[in-house]
Image (cartoon, rainbow, N blue to C red; front, top):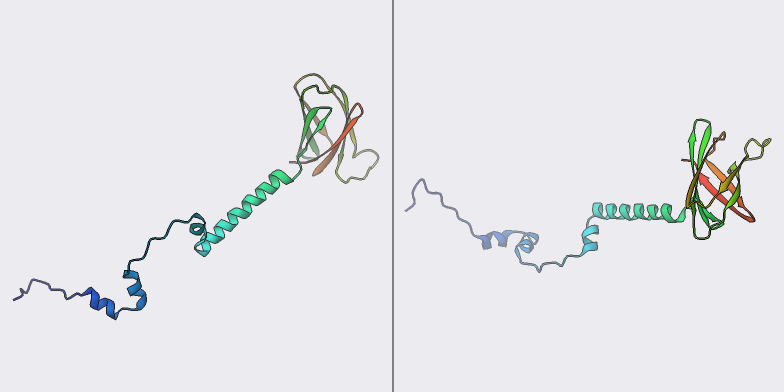
Length: 170
């Protein structure tokens, strides 16, 4: 006979599962374990898929900007030249860096600086400079020009070689 302090449970899992819906019964059946799949784990829910697609799009944009947008460097007389422009108030600071490669040319370099797409107004939008490339491996030239523009075009000539460089202001 049972004690009053003793609690007795009448629990039968099989009877309970008989009365349960098919979905609940399927949960209790053993299922083979799925293999881990990297791609499906990234896209198995809508938020995960959206995040994955956003990461892919951002990565492609970074690759596009890094590799397909032209940079402001070129070669002139076996010298590697890069130009950077920084705007400040109503003027622009220009830095031209030269790195000499093997058997690089030396001499006077004519530099013409103009804003991209600017019309010539009494020569105000045209700045001319002369620099000298020597046998140093690296050289750096700096100018302050009284032109405030988002982009510049640089025409460089060393002897009979000419090149054009486009540079955007930072």
